Image (cartoon, rainbow, N blue to C red; front, side):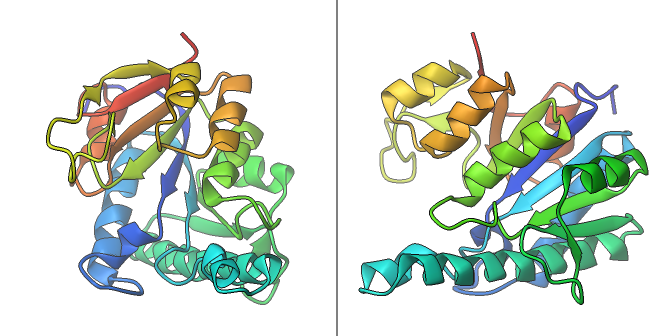
Length: 239
């Protein structure tokens, strides 16, 4: 592969991506494939941080929608992200990729606690760092966690792995005439209400001048292709 475009990146993986064709939980084969793509990028010398969602296991908003307490629901969702982080770390370690899980919620018997200093130290040591537990606060999504961790680790770009190969004007699976964008600004994403990442996440990325690169997490090798300057994606930048 060509020389990588970035030296340090944050990859956001949704919990749903780990389900595969299942309706719930984790498809180990899918986790292994995603881990293989990450290992390929790590082999290029790129330092990689990962934020993984928990939607394949639990969503806090589901509790609130049925009259439950949102804070408790979000705490349950955070625990789901820890499960996914441990699963992805297991897949990476099977490929001999040194990996550490850092949680925003202290659980020392299971994984290390998050701190910026620990993050930088692990990245400098060549480890892939998986961030679990979201931001550690209710009412914030894992998209917001991804933007926040990207800023804290000094990432040069946020890679958002989605179900499609970029940003569209509407859901291309429901609207065949949806327009696909190659490039947008952070402000255009916010102004047009494009459902890429939530408003807080896009705002953090904009304020810290971090580009967002949206691509399909299901394209084998797609992460590495984009890292080398190719591949199908939409890039969101300041201008």
